[in-house]
Image (tube, rainbow over all chains, first blue to last red; front, side, top):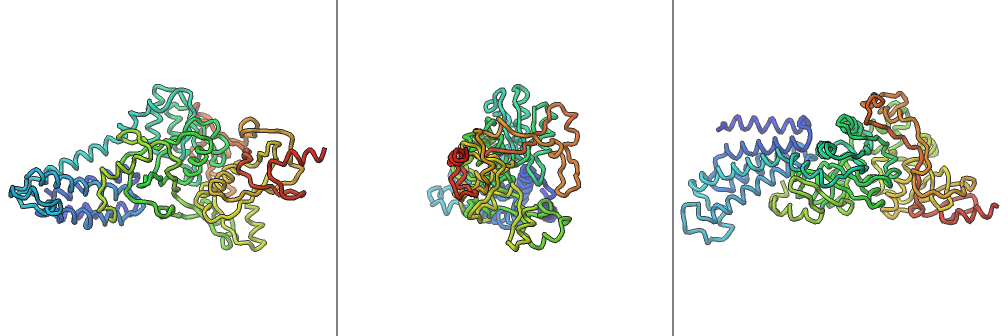
Length: 345
Length: 155
């Protein structure tokens, strides 16, 4: 059992690494957050469940989310942990584990506060084992997704993708072991992530062609399906994805091609996009128009959004570690994994 | 960028963005003006690659798309998609990842040595007539389906 000072040091370390964006990729962020929260739960002394929830949500969770507000995966994991804790306490008290024996009929509100020290000691290992299961599920995310690769790709297909997504890369490489198909990668200016993706795919022996972003509409008539990854999935089924994804998805809709999004469930956020751009970031416009261009810079406004919002009508299917789901099913997954009380972290 | 220079020198308030920002920028737009390389007899616009993308995104948000085109660019040909006739530019232009005039080769500089990696640099694309609202020519403002009518007038 780690002392409170060690725990604080671990929390500080993760907060700082998140703030400096030293933890790269939603998957790494999710795993680190989950492991830290497991430490927090095992190290905290609690009698009432509200104490534990307050520690996880306000002391630790809020600090992590504030360190990197654009990385929605942090908030997702905190919400999931809180939900797990509440579920465990609910089932635990309901089955009379609290030791007092007479309170099983009391209202649900009372059940949550009904922990005697004995109850807390018994509930704690259950909660920790649930957290461990969640961490195992996170670690096996990629394995579960790529198992579905064969069902969705057949021979001689032309698949389009945009940006660089580890999930899509592994998905396509798995399918390439048994099927022969081609991939068109959009170069995804200005981050040029498409170049890295294309190199990696061609090294795996997949026939890859790099096209410029402007040619996406032109080639869409020849593409069979679009497979892309995403940064986050919002509660309505909309995506926060790399800039340019909205173009690809709209072009695919106009040509009636299916758009498949490969993502782990840890990217599903309970937040709702009341404004399309509430999750967007405008980054330095230097790649768009550099300082070498001279005086024009003072007279023009330059736009360089980092993310794109893709509306749920444009997506045909989500392939997640729990299987394939249409966008209309996501509300169910949110209901199962997150509590409505926690969305305001 | 030349267009940007002209407009700024004329005193117009300008915002410059790359194609990937078109979804983001389109919210504040009320009209779209595009140029043409040629106009097909089926009302389709043959123009610089990327034009079709902008026209499609504008149509998606019900923003009018206006093409400025002289009648000498109208042609008898009909074309349905961007593949049947197009021009390939230098594929090495894709390798260059710098935005200034000095080319800076990126990750793909060895693409010739990799058997499975190809680069495709299309120069033109075709915008279907359903995305075009009106065409401004020296004979007036016409719908894009009237292109063969104007051609016939000239014969």
